[in-house]
Length: 301
Image 1 (tube, rainbow, N blue to C red):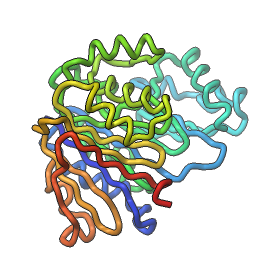
Image 2 (image 1 turned 180 degrees about the vertical axis):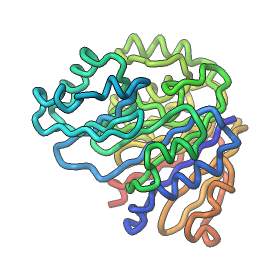
Image 3 (image 1 turned 45 degrees about the vertical axis):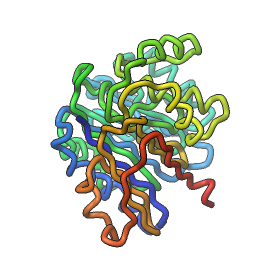
């Protein structure tokens, strides 16, 4: 049992409130998963710039002098420290070199996510503590997803927390259990994917990354997942401009959605949505089994 939330804003006037709204939704879901929690926030991208969100179990050591270490690669690099995480902003064409240098010189640092717009924060602990630790409430953005975990198949660790990100500006949160993840992992490794954990949810994220690398959009990749993934699952997925939801054909994991002129929202339970503005007038429904729901800011523009 885990708790999932997601929020895709249509109304730009709500963007400064995204972090606060998503945080409230996640905290309400605390009793569905007290082990660990995480949130992905999609902000407005800066032209030609990239973000790399990193984490360390020993930030005092690993983050010391990080600016100076990276300056020879990109003189314009900036590092914003946030507790056990840091957000590195660099020129997009230098992002790969920055990651390579981090891997060589600071092996204790782990990349949580990267891309033009996404920032991912996750840690062991209750949602209220994770939200407070990283200042999520003050963050703005266009859309975001969150997860509070009750571990069933793997250890309670930061790397085992959701969201999982295996591609640029892409991440996934999952409630359920996949039965064919080991075979699928082996296939994806042969295709060149790498994995940080043994978590089945990371395999689902990597599967979608691989499908989108073939030219599919998020909606098409989620449609393929219905044929290729076995087990019980509810996925909420974010991309740079998109937001998608899918449940397996049996759909035994709870889910509810709401839509107004201002937003589209997802929660594992309706109580996650009750404080959203205008929820009393929203169209509220339970997403159908084996049905893909997909929205994209770029396609709506």
